[in-house]
Image 1: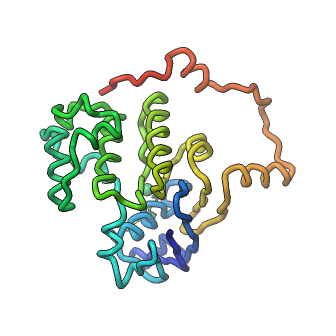
Image 2: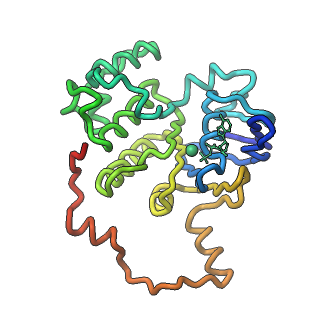
Length: 250
Ligand code: ADP
Ligand code: MG
């Protein structure tokens, strides 16, 4: 679905992306992992046609990024930073605004139901909880019925319940055939969601494989965990005590 070859991005004399190559298969959830400053967002934004590259080739669904950016825009969904929405508008109004931008006529209630926000149709964006805002911003990526969606740290700052709820949503979107590219700092999330992950560091891809294979490779190199594994962790305790139900935090 996506081919990236020898992609480079310089900001002035600083090389933020240093000639990376990878492919994303149709229908997979592909994770871009790496510490802050690794070049994940730069790489995403280049694929999203929002940022110019310095060199290299990018092909998305057979379309060349340099020659056919408009064709690419038609088949991708891009999650905007949540602050990009007019805070005072109601969700229905925002969906209709996006309908206008994309020249679509998606039924707002149907779209909001897909992300479990039908009850919030007439609520103002600013009144939503953090998890609801993230679900709404994912909904807006689906308006043009995209073949690929790009999610940049969609679960940052969410409580464990809202995070799990978003995992279900992302899996459902993929199960309908949409290819998903996601960045995250949560390794449990990447392990749960991603078919394959690329680990970036300082502008380079230093590993690319299914999470399970990366773990097996580490173990076969003789790696041993310091702490004994208990078969449950503190997050399990937290979810056990507080339940899976979503909370409406502000
Ligand atoms: P990540 O998303 O992995 O945290 P980014 O792609 O945002 O990384 O940034 C990669 C590097 O490029 C960082 O060192 C960052 O400071 C730098 N960078 C990002 N955007 C710009 C920009 N517009 N101008 C200059 N440097 C930038
Ligand atoms: Mg980033």
